Structures are given as structure tokens and as C-alpha cells.
Image (cartoon, rainbow, N blue to C red; front, top):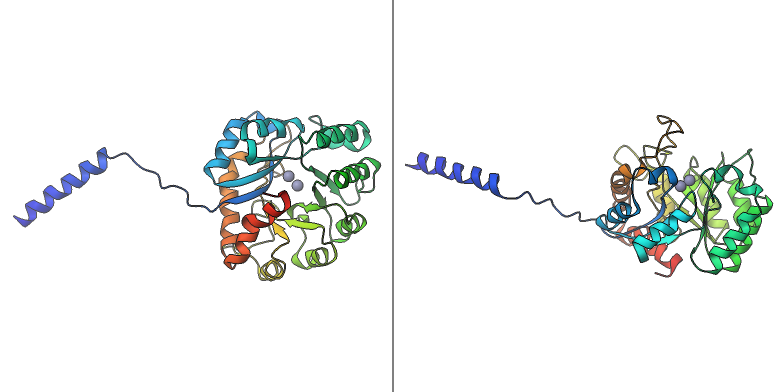
Length: 299
Ligand SMILES: [Zn+2]
Ligand SMILES: [Zn+2]
């Protein structure tokens, strides 16, 4: 009798499981400000502005700093995403602009027009590689920094170099400009970043692309902060922010004539950042996750 009961119960459970719709668990991620996203021409070939905004909303992104090549694409994202998107003026005003922006005085005129009309509320991402042109003292970049000061907007700057000196020069020379230091200098270690946070109060260090798939060097195999980084971030909890930087073409497995599928990796990158942030004391974690970025953008 008992055996029969169980057999019937099993059948009921089986049919219930068969007919009930599968409900996916909601993502219980806390709000996070993503200070480094791109919507570039070679990403637009694969994903629309609408799809990106959907991804951001679904992932509980509080707001996102958008920078694009060409720069107008950040405004396209803004038109769709509204308050969710903080568009920066990129000096890369055409598809190949990354290569000649520093030679074109018109870059400054376009930046001025975009900032004065408040269509853009920041400048960047601007890339430098130590030892290669453009140098950080080129005339166009200096004028862009003047505009950042005039309009009180932050500058997202990416400098690849072997030590902190290249960036320290810039942040010290321009104490009235607020800088977002992209990827904490890419290859740099916590010991390189400490002098920057100590000597340049005008800098927020951002930790995008320090994930295991790109620059790395931030966390261990379990995606927890390395002790040196943990110590530094806890010591200066108001000075760090993060972002996903969903650009994939920087990896060597892809060639430059292909579209960039970076947005396919967005959720994975975001989960990674939540993982190491959640390992911090909660008061610090909250600052990194969203509060520091809110302060920067008056949100
Ligand atoms: Zn970068
Ligand atoms: Zn970037």
C-alpha cells in the first residue's frame, strides 16, 4: 500500500515538473555603477543600443559611463537609456579617430561644443602608451584638459606604462581636473597606485579590465582581491570605482578586421566585479560598488 502511494506521488511530482513553467531566479545583484562601458562602431555591428540598455537594466546597473568611437554613439545610447547613461566626449570622432585625434584641432572645437551644450558630461577614454605618440603633453590633449577644468567634468584616461610616473606627471600638473585612471594603469601593481592616491587627490582609480581575461593582476584564482590591493582599497575606500569595459578585441585571439563581441561577456565581467567587491567589508564594498561614483556624478 505504502509502495503504491509513493509510486503515485512520484508520478504526480513528475507531471507537475513537466507542466509547470520554468521560472528563472531573479538576479539578486546589488546596484553597481559601471564607470567604463563602450558602444563602438565595431560593437554596433553586433548589438543595438536597445539591447545594451536592456542588459544594464537587467543587471541592476545604477548608471554607466559610456564612451564611444565615434563619439556620437555614446549619445545614441543616452537617447535610449536616459538617466542610466552618462555620456563622455571621446576625441575619437570617427572610426579610426584613435590614430589621429591629437593632430586635429577640430577635436577641441567639437569637445567644447559638446560640453557647453551639456550633451557630454566628461571626456575620454583617451589612450596613451609610454614611449609612443601621442604624448600626454600634446597640444590637443592639453586643451581638452582645459575644457575639463572649465566645464568641471572628469577625464577618463588610459596610460600603459611600466610604472606610475607617466600618470603622476599628468595628475600633478592638472590638480583642478578630476581624472578617472582607467584599469588602475593596466599592468601596474598596488604599490604603484599608492603614490597616486596619496599625491593626487583629484584622481579616482578605476579597476575595469583587471579581470583574469585581460590585464589581470588584481585578484586570485578565487576572484578575491590580492592582499596588497585589498589593503590599499581598505586604506583609501573613497578613491576606487569599477567598471566592466566590455571590449574584447584587445585580446590577441581576434584580428582587427572583426566586429567586437565584448557585450557577450558583459554579465561574466560584472559577476567577476561583484565577486571581489563582496569580499570587502560591507561599508567599503558599498563605496566601491556605487557611492564613490555617485559622488563624482552628483547622483
Ligand atoms: Zn582602456
Ligand atoms: Zn575602455
